[in-house]
Image 1 (cartoon, rainbow, N blue to C red):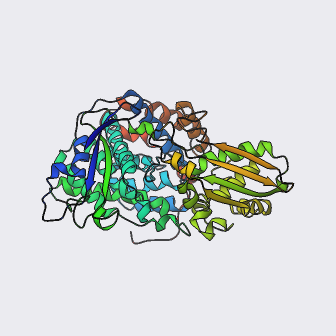
Image 2: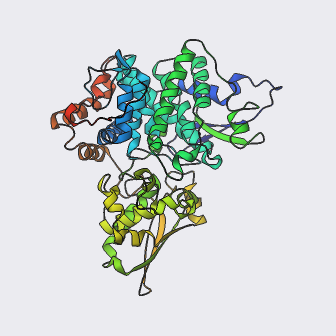
Image 3: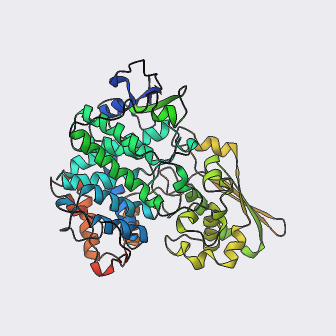
Length: 511
C-alpha cells in the first residue's frame, strides 16, 4: 500500500489487492473487506459539506421515487412489499406512514422506485454506479431499528465512500459483471456504520453481500427490461439479509476478494491481477459523496452533456430537415454502452422499451435536438419515439470512440474528468455545425452546478400534481433538519400520496 491525497484533501491509502493461493494464509487484517470494515467502524468526524450533500441526495431520491410510483415495476415491487407487513417496520414511498413492512421489502420497493426513471445520482470511473441506490436500504433499516438522523447520515456517508472507491479501483463491466456487485458491499458497510457494529461483523457482512450480488450485465444489454430498476433494489435487499445473518454470528466466503476461487480470481481479472483500491485513512472525514453528481435529465449519465449539446444545436440549426448526418465523437464507454458501438439494434428501434431508449444516445440526441429540451415522461412516449422526423434524425446518427475523450473520461482529477463529446452535424449543403462540451452543465464542475435550490426545484417539478403542497413543504422542512431528527423520527422522511392516485397491478404472484 501507499499514501495519496485527493482533490478534496482526503488522506487516502492505496491498497494493492491481489489473489493468494489457498496454501498461503492471508490474515484478515490484510484483506480488502477488512480494510473497508475498518473505515465503516471508525469514529470519523462529519464534514459539513458532505452532510449537506446527503440531504440533497435524499431530496433527489424522493423526487424520482414519487414521480415513478405508478410505473409498472414500482407498482409490482410495492404490492410485493405490502404482503410483508410488520408492526415496527419501515415505510413505503407513497403509502400511509402508519403502514409498515419488513425493512428488506421496504428497501426492495423503495429502491425500485428510486431507480426506475434512471434520474438520480451517478459516479463514473473504472466502472459505473448510482451511489444513491445505497439510501433506500439504509433508510429502511434505520426506520425499523429506530435510528437517529445523525446515524443515518453517518451510514450514508460510509456507503458512498465505499462504493465510490470500489468504482475507482475495480472495473466490473470489462467482464460483463453488473455494477451492483459494488453496491452490495457498500450497503453492508453503511448499515454497519449506522448500527455501530463491530469491525468483525461488518467484515463478514461485506463478504456475504458481495458473494450474493454478482450478476451479469445482460440486464443492461439488448432489450433492457424492468430488471434494470429492480437490480439495485435486489442488491440492497440481499445486503440487509447478509448483515442480519452476520449479526447472528454467521460467517461468509473468505477472503472474498483475494481467495483462490474469489471474485477476482474467477470472475474479474484473474489470479495474476493487481487492483489498486483507494480508501481514506481510519478516522478521516468521509467526502466521497462530494465527488458524485446527479442528473438534470432522465437518461443515462453519459447522455447528460449530449442533451445540453443538442439543446444548443437546436438554437443554431434553423431547419432540421436539412440535416444529412450527425457524428458524435466521444469516449469508449459512451460509444460502446449507449452508442452505435454497443451493436444493439434495439437502440435504433422506435418500439423499444423505455429502459432501452434511455440507453440509446442516438434516440436521446435526436429528440433533444428536435425539441430543444428533455422531459422524463414526454420524451419517452411511444408516439414520440415513432415520430417520422425523429426517426430520420435518429438513424442518421453514428458514434465514434475518440481516444482523447476516452483519456479525459478516465482522468483521476474530478475537475478534468469528462463525460462529454464533440458533435459534428453535416447539412445537406455540405455545411458543418460543430458543438462540444466536456461536462454536463449541471455537473459540480459544469457551467451551472446543482445546488440545494436546484434539488428542491427538481423535487417540486417531479412531484407536482402527485403530492399536496402541504406534504411537499412538510417533507422539505423535515429533511433539511435531518441531523437533528431523533431516534424513531425517520418515518417523517416518508412521503404520502392520496391512495386513490396509486395504481394497482391486477396480476397476482406467490405472496
